[in-house]
Image (cartoon, rainbow, N blue to C red; front, side, top):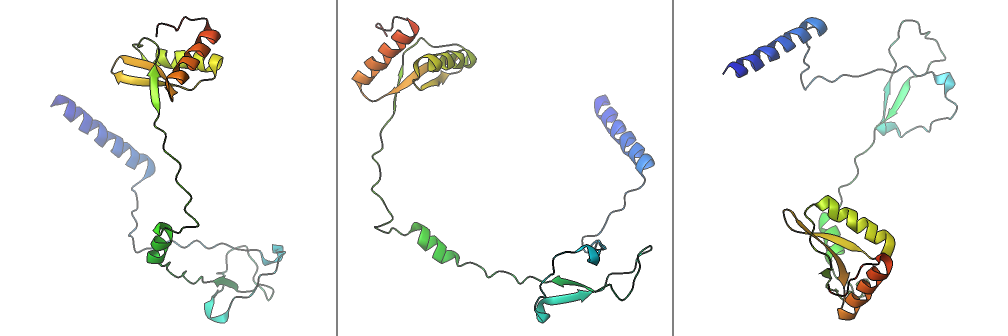
Amino acid sequence: MLRLIGILTGAVLAIAFLIVALGVPEFATPETEVIAEVAIDMTAQTEPVAEPEPEAAVESAPAPQAGLETGPETEPMVEAVAEPAPEPDYEALVEQIFSPTPESDPEPAPVLEENWYAFWSPFRSELAANGFVSKLQESTGIDYRVLKIKTGIYEVAFAYSDDDDIEDKLARISAATGLDMSES
């Protein structure tokens, strides 16, 4: 209970300090829009702007500001109003994406099931297993994975397709590292 009172007191003091330092915040209602006016130097504009269609243009004269000269050379600012883009036909898009067409659907590639062969005794830390994998990948060029059996047990394995592939990869590991992999 004492901690809660301390937390609330600290929060109130922090808010009071911010109000004293920065002043009372002024909250705007969502209906209020803030419009920023920007003065544009028309003489600095080097590229002529194409005139928009009369029905899509809205003319607004810039408000005179202190320090700016207003004369006959200033022109009213013309802003183009963009028309909303037409809504896409979602049903046609879905049909186009999911409809099978014979010329666009190539034969699906046969899915090869990846088998992973764990060839080393389990590690107790994932960090140690990843370090072992990175050194083996540098020396052999074989793709290895760290398999989490359960918390605290991580095995290092490589992908294989058949028994001959396992023997070939074990021989490559033995040749690259000098480790005897015949009993694995």
